[in-house]
Length: 252
Image (cartoon, rainbow, N blue to C red; front, top):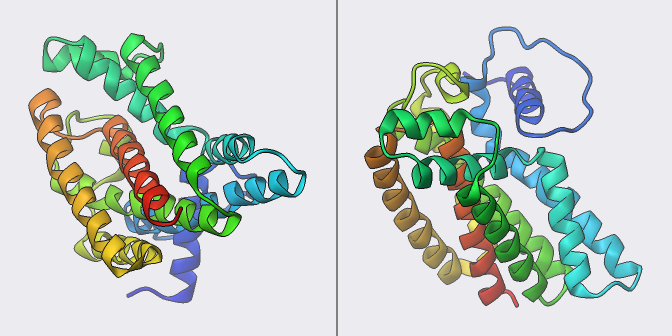
């Protein structure tokens, strides 16, 4: 049963893992990343608010919306340490460049970036920058960023639970087994964020996310037989793009 103390510990674990914010060292007794992964969408809220703050400052300084959008996107990437962008890049390189499952996993573990990874990163940045720039007001930008960062990260625990480990070692394998309550809590937080799009918009966005989830899950099973830390980052990025597109269409 969660208590205020365990919730606080989970949030600190989530912040340490999902961001590069300067936080004091701490030790969480009897709590692990598997327990704390439900906080992923809440950490997304933190990233969204910080990114929006950069947008707001740029707007106050009189910068054009396109420049403010670029600053917001850059700030969000710096706060998260490009954790998910790195996963998308590695996944694109592995899935695109490897012929066998073993070779794909080997490429994904390589720290060097290839053509597929570079193109995927560039397209992700371009898509998100364009979508943020289409949002009409700072208030709409805040709503779009919150929806995208929160709901996209809400998929992470379910993705980890519903796919087997593609390798026995690595970041994802080290997390361990997730409980149903962790998955459902994250999904509930993500669903609340989608309501910022309105009821109809939330339903449309949820359907789009479900289709993405099913399609990408199938792709991962075919390509590498499961999920890894890189594919977790990739699905977050793809979901974030879809949600920013939805926000730009509904809120603009």
